[in-house]
Amino acid sequence: MSKTILVVDDEKMFCEIISERLKAAGYTVLTAENGQQALDILAKNKVDVVLSDVKMPVMNGMDLLKHVQELINKPEMVMMTGYSDFTEKEMVDAGAVAVLEKPGIWDKLIATLSTIRLH
Image (cartoon, rainbow, N blue to C red; front, side, top):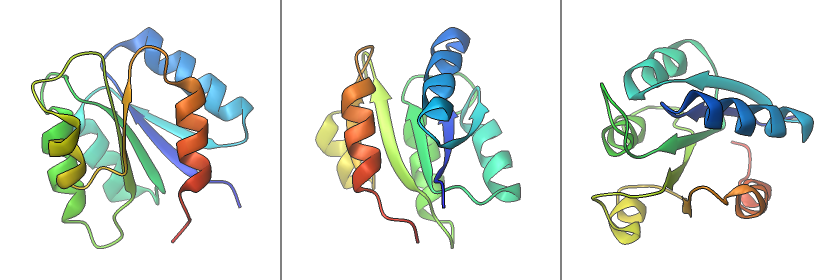
């Protein structure tokens, strides 16, 4: 059974590249441009992992992380950032299973995803 991953990033090109690579690696992928769109998708779809940027308009990744922690069937959260007002410790303490530094996240992302168990 393939993991379903929701990629949340306001950088459209980055989101497309990561999505295509994840699909090629056998994952089912959904995308959103911000945290609010992500919550709308999570309300309608079973998602195993949310891969979210931190800095985004409308709703940033930390606010999304807080909302996801309140869900009954909460997916695992992996945060990505090139620059953030939040520390890695703050993100992990808030519930993230990993924090990946952009742009070179691919190898670390695949390693992280392989350790996440399906619920």
